[in-house]
Image (cartoon, rainbow, N blue to C red; front, side, top):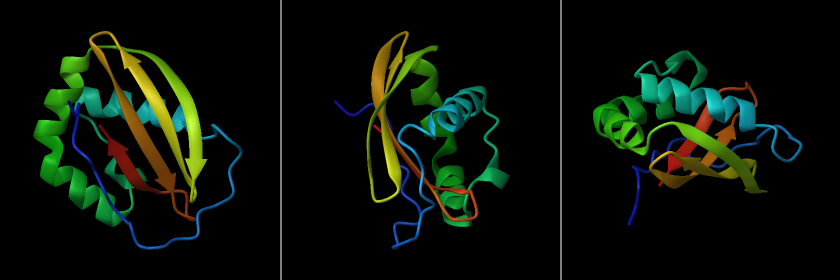
Length: 112
């Protein structure tokens, strides 16, 4: 069963900055907390991601809230400039993919 909405943005080819494995963990922790609180930081998102999330915000927040508090976030790998994480919450788990553009803005965010 899928636990979330796929938020796909900027799926066009991009040149992501070189990152060491797991470098986006702190950023993702902040994003999860912001999304659960209903205070997404749109200024940190690329325009396409911002528009995609706004269109799905209510449903995404409901799903994230049902998961409860984040307990652990584990780096699972990287591909094409994006990192994948497994998130264990109080009431379930989900998988997240996060990517950033050269300007440092989040241009890919997927959770399921």
